[in-house]
Length: 248
Length: 146
Image 1 (cartoon, rainbow over the protein chains, first blue to last red):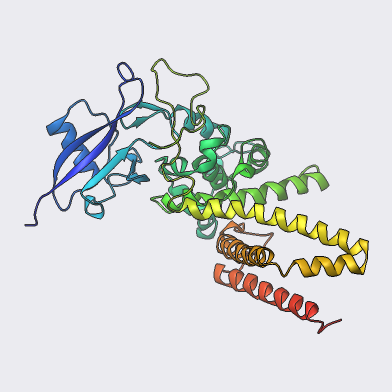
Image 2: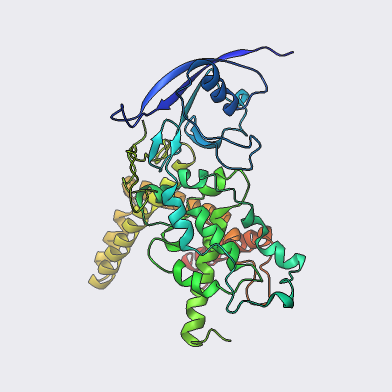
């Protein structure tokens, strides 16, 4: 059995009813060698300070709830082992988001941005049920599969310098999801989305820092999606300029 | 604590009833961690601005006659100019390498009926074109072509 090691966790605390602004609080946590950062936060909550608020659910990097800044980097705390850090670990809420309480951030703004890109299959005319399901080949699935792995953990938003400075920017996850549907062979909404993508605060606001892709725990590569969407938006604009009905 | 982000960043269009703490920028932005390379990449724009001004100065010297041109050429031997040109060379190489590393994944999955070539092939093509154009420019400047 490996040794338990004491680590100091410096955690951001914020109570909207009492604190003028966020502050830091330290906790000594006896960490088991196989612990993730989330295990340490749960230990603090269960054993040291029940007032600490943080989000988590699945504990297997699928639900995307437990994203926080750990030692300054956006991290899924259920995926990151404490062993990768030193004796002091700093845990803060995700950057670029308003903070509701302690490590819990406000997600309403993201949900509004997400709706903008129409993240669902758009059909010009809905097919009757009798016509059966829309079929798709493995090659067609391969075109967008990578971009459908997003778990909306918000790490990409926390890493993006454009999100910090340009509130209108739709952001990495929302654009990646819109692009995912543009690439879906069953979808007919690419022109609608390309018009949205050509608007203010969309794909052309991205300065390709590539940080969103660096921190993505599911290797979705939102930077690739955004820059591919730039290309597709220009092609769509040019096509509709020359052929007003889009070549149909 | 990290610098303040735009107070509207990732906020809801209609604020809720709970008071929130304003958003903060990523702690490492803009000069630490991986952001350093991104910030430097953007900062090279200043070098290109200065190079553009230098080109205008050369154009004026060219218009003013051979003496002005010779004087401009002589001034380039000053250590400050030499240092600036060395910086410009490093900037161009840095921007080229970063751009070439990010360019392949920005290609759409299909261009018409064709898929783009694999990323290593795109990168090799970019570097080959870069070396080819640089060699051609060196040959022209050395008087080997005209």
